[in-house]
Length: 157
Image (cartoon, rainbow, N blue to C red; front, side, top):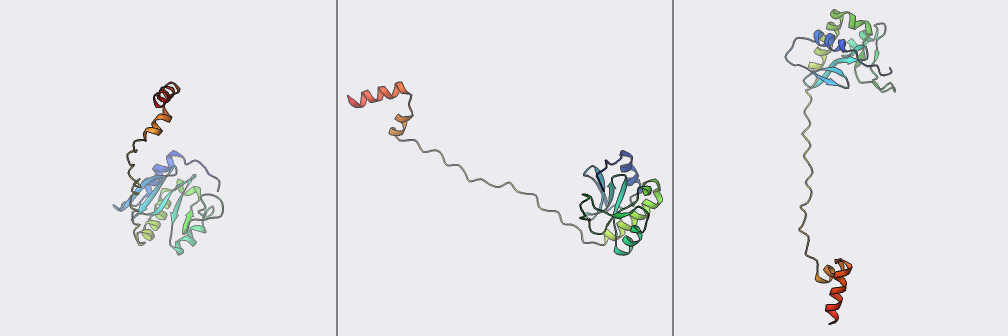
């Protein structure tokens, strides 16, 4: 499916339909709203519709809905596992959206909790050694032309 900007009202519709459970967490993801339980995404907004991550039996039932399809966010044939893009009409039927989100929540609540990845530590760069003082010969070559001439005169004398 080609990318379609998510209507602003879809966020509020999805949030209102989420299960009233303290484990439900929402976050903004790619311009949409994602719903998570134990770190696992179970639903969200996409285009003018909603996505749900379902158990196999529920997937078959969801895909039987007119307009439902496997969720392929990039439209390149790489579908997200167990995830269904519900028909757009679901956003107009809050009770049906609630039922699908509840089923997705129930399934995902049984999955192992996602572990947080540890924060990346900044790589330590080796300490810089203080620059050694250049020898007198090197110091002479770094001097400007007028000073070089004065040094040459002193050396010859």
